[in-house]
Image (cartoon, rainbow, N blue to C red; front, top):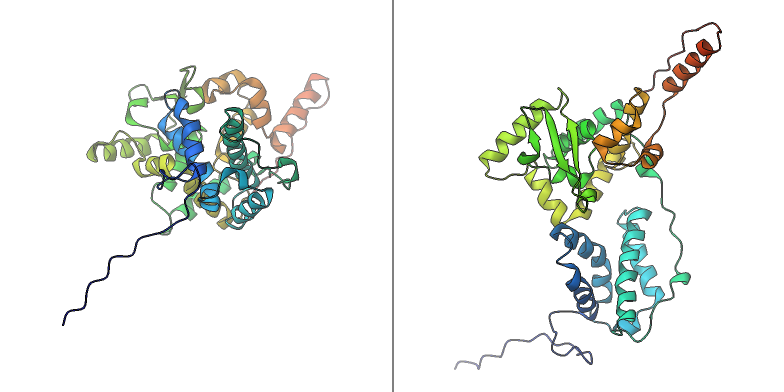
Amino acid sequence: MNEPQQAPLKRTYTPIPGYEHYEHRTPLELLYEDWLAPRKNTTKESTHGAYEDQMLPFFDHFKRRELRTFTHEDVVTVMNRMLKKGLTGQVIVQKLQMFRRVLQWGVDTGKIDRMPLKWRLLPRIQCGKSEKLPFTYAEHQKVLEECAKERYHKFWAPACRIAWHTGLRMGDVAQIDINVVNFNAGVVYLGSMKKSTTREKLEIPIEPDLLPLLMELAKTAKERETPFLLHQMCTYYREQRSVLINVFREICDAVGFRGSFHSYRHAFVTRLLNAGVDPITISSMTGQTLQIIQGYSHVSVNAKAVALAKSRVAMGLTAEKPTIIEVE
């Protein structure tokens, strides 16, 4: 005799007053979507992905809880989880700022009756200065050797080489496409992400060491019918930017360098300044102001020794040959 079939189990949950009809969204996600709605027409899709990536740790922690029940102890728990995952202080602070921005918007618009968190009670996070460290050529070579290992995606080595020769940010390297590379003129005409509002174009000459790599990447992109030279890296950057940041941090840790992908930008500006290139020329390639370039510069000991030798000549003293110190 056949036994009667049991009805399939249904997922049950305790409905939150006011959110009964939004079973697929949590209160915090709904608030975030309301905050994002008027900004969708003025920002890029990649920016939307970055916003959501910053909010994900808080979505996962608070789940279906009411906004008014949030406490600073909850936020401390989220901060500790991010620290255990290896996120830097600067990244954690950016996520906290985004979270606070959304909540404050909810208070200002009346969607939350009061600010549920006491921000002054949160522990302070020391933001390290790792991104202000420039790569030396020897460190760059070590990074390339590490990127060649099977555990990493194949796009890392080309991305690092492009960053070394151009000083571009991670987002610009990931989204570089065929249309911005002029092989006949030997120049990369790029609209930087941070200069998108002014539509300013950067002109970066293609160095001889970089030209074969760009030609190879362009050929592969045409075969795959995609405009992006690093298509897979572009996908990761738009959908899972934090993954790229964490993986490159692992690469830096493996070679014993306390830096980030942005260190390539510091290295680019530093070696040009040490070579005697004027800041205005550097600004035309990086899009930075002269004040920012000053903050990015890291004058080498050799450059300082040469400057002191020139000062002796200017004073009529004996022009002694400066001692050149080899830096490994």
